[in-house]
Image 1: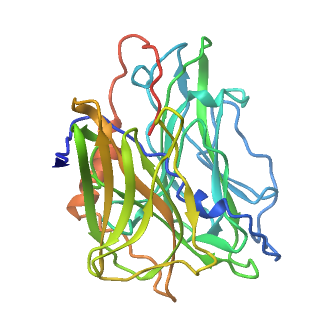
Image 2: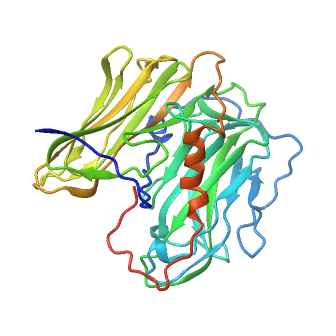
Length: 372
């Protein structure tokens, strides 16, 4: 029996920590050249300790944009719902050029490192740009406790303009027995200025899910074989240079289809352990074949296939998502976001506005819950 999945809404937030830049950054490429310097900037120490940490700083010596969220206190053994989370950070980038990845750190009020296990999830978004297959805010990156620093090859860069906005959303918890105060999430983004030569090739991250774009990304998993899917139309043409997927236990496959041409353009299967449990998903690159083509005006569908042998419906047991890098054709650039589009409005409400809430009355054990 083959089932179609019914999507559920609700307040449960599942964040897929797909390394959208990492699919290409994993390729060991090097490209000689001069990184350039931002003119008129003197190197000064980045301030991470104390009460008055600037939200946006530029580390001229390291060549990095440094974004700092507001401080929060982490009680011992506190679940993320028991922590008064920092509000979303909206930062205007001080300089244009290209970004080459991101690293997330967690520090206390003295600027000392806090265990990375306190990261539940961190999301980096570009609110002035839309996604490739939907009208939500562009997803630049997602980080969990286990996410390594992401660095693009020197050949590639994410183009940004002075004054362009980046939003950082973070949820922290504390699985340790120690309490921490004044904890800040710090995002470092390697930067190449406008005068960099040779100029990097401009690439854009993209994200797609098998559930509606501005909603919870988990769904109930019925017994037996089932599929969940979502589709969207690409506004620009380009070539996908790399991508990877996210699935849960009992998954069979994740595939991307060109609905317009009625063909499958990419398919992957989960990596399982000896007990049949999902342990990893491969990240695949297509640099040697000059990428997988995406055509403007074509409709694309992401499909997650599952086979649930338990005989029971597993609440929020399924997920299916894709993240990757695309190089747009020619000088087509990237479409701006439409703040009035219903998907965009719902995305802002779901990801940002509705986050403002009171924490639980008492700390809750973090248990074995992991981020997605």
